[in-house]
Structures are given as C-alpha cells and as structure tokens.
Length: 408
Image 1 (tube, rainbow, N blue to C red):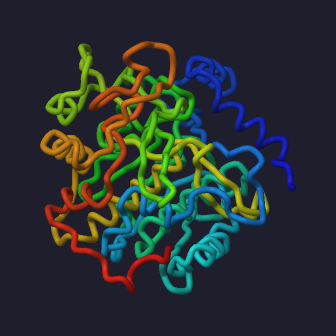
Image 2 (cartoon, rainbow, N blue to C red):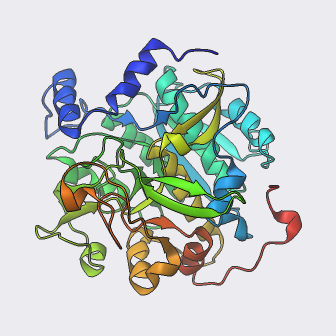
Image 3 (tube, rainbow, N blue to C red):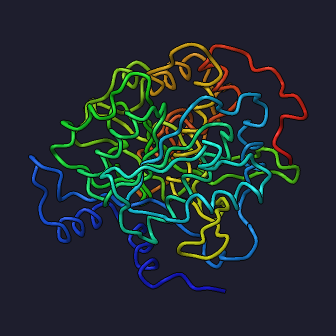
C-alpha cells in the first residue's frame, strides 16, 4: 500500500492544531498581515484523509449511500442547466480523468470536457503549478459536486496559488463564466481588513459556500462573510438498510463568533442564541465531515488510488450541489439562500433539518457543545435534502421515475 508523501503528512497535522496556534504559525510563516493588502495572506485546504484507506477499491461512503441518507434520491431534478463553480488553488492535471473513473465506478452520468459537462479555467490565464495537497482537495470537490447533482455542469477554476489575491480573482472569473453557485473549500484565520472583501460574495443570483474549519472551536474566513453559507461538520450514522440513523457533532467542526463581521439580519431574526455582541455566528448548516465516516474519492495525482476522506470541505461541494438542484427545479430567480435557510428553519425547523444535539468541538461549555436547535458546532443542523429543496423552491417534489434514479 502506497504511503502518503511526507510533505502531505505534515500538512495534515496542521489541521489538528488549535485556532490560536494556527494563527501564530500563519503570522510567523507569512509575516504580520497588512490590513490594506491581502497579497500575503494564504488560505489552506480543509480535508482529512482517513488513515490506511488508500486502496484499489472504494471503502468510504458511496454517492448512493449519501444521496439516500440525506434524501437526494427522492428528487427528480439533478441540477440540469446549472453550473457549479469550484475554486481551488494550484493545478490537478488529472482532475478530469479521475472524475471519469469516479463516475464510472458509481454509475454516474459521464461528466467530461467532450460532452460539455466539465470545464477547467486558469484564473491567471495559464496553467498553474501542480500541487499534490490541493490536488486532493480538487478531486474531492469535483467528484462530490457531481455525485449529488450529476446533471449540473462543473466549472473548475484553478488559482495561480493560495493567496487571497489570486483566489478572489478566481472567484470573479467563475462568476463571469456563469456559475450559479460557487464552492470554496479553503479558509484562513480572520484578519481585521476582511470586511472590505465581503462584497466579492454579494452577487445577485450566485450563492457562495465555504467550510467552517477543521480545528474545532473558532471561525475562519471567508465562511463568516455575511453572504457565504458556512458548512460545519458531523459524524453520520446509517442503519443496516442504508437509511439515515443519526448524526453527532464532529470534534473538528469549526464554529463560534466572528471577530469582525456583524450579525446579519437573517441571524438576528431567527435568532441565533447567546449573541449578545451582535457578531456573525458560524456555521450555518452542517454535513458529514468526520473522516471516520468519510466519503470515497479517486485520486491518481498524489495518491494513486481510492481514499476515504472527510473534513468540513467534504460538505461544501455537496451543499453547493443541493443549491444547484434547487435552482434547477424552479423558474424563479433564486437568490439570498443563506437568509432563506434561516427563514425556512424558523417556520418548519423539524421538517427541514436534522437537529444535531450531541457532540462538541472543544472545552468551552455552551459554545462548543451541540444543542437543540441552532448551535455553534453544527449550525441549524444537516439538511433533509428533499424537504429543504422543496421548501427553497416552494414546490412539493414528485417521486422520481424508477428509470431516472442513480442505481443503488
């Protein structure tokens, strides 16, 4: 069995450090942050590979299992006509071919450059340097966006590097190329000048998704930007028949209050609890992220086989796919879905969300412990996919015809 490269093992160790340690290390590595510039601020990818899972065979959760657990297999619509923008740093030259292997293995429709489903763009106009670490992130994002919304187009925009200057440039390119929802599986410590960049994520008709962090209690940017949907993490349990059984909060799930972002109106009106300083709370929603209950991906660039993977970024592309399905299922011009998640939850919480009430992400009492209703580990909870999509579109989903379902 191939061992992960030494450099990648070190990268993975970083995600188990506390947010304070991460902040100190980041400032030491990159210098003190210049609040008038973001050219020196770097984001990191957010995933965890389950130990000893590199194999010739998939051993993590499959698309069929995840789609069934979260109710996506009850939906006819699979994202047709929508474009999911995936913004990551550096290059994975095998992203398209690995997606083909993934699709074939799980009976998903082909998504290739030839049939117009898959497209890669370079934000600086030329192919960036390859990077094994970010290559795994790209594989995860591309393959699981397609797994949940198999008829949506996938637009992968590769940034020249992991600086915010170039990542934000990549986001603007994804918007200009027609992405209706954009997933950003990366983040960094907050910085005092971040609010001046929040407008990047305020684009009518486009939704932005980001992970809440993998180091436990504490928040990261851009997930706390007011127009970004922050995705926290859970441990998913299914029964012997493959049905949803329960979820607990994943210990790595980022969450808490932003230092710099004000509480958006949708959180004030919900309201989220214990927010006496009127700061933005995170996460907004949660999804399976524990690598122990991770999903399968195929990565031939850095790992040469199937691996089982988790992290809060594992949920970002899947939540993006859920939103793409909702946008595809209606002729309405859907926008402001971050607010909609709270407004709908206020009306019919128990129908639309799995309430995560056990588990914690630290030792800070209430703010680190899953609670009934909204909490700062899992947010509103995880989606009951078919019901939440139905509520977003304002329709009742008909049962899918048997010949249109992804095979179990």
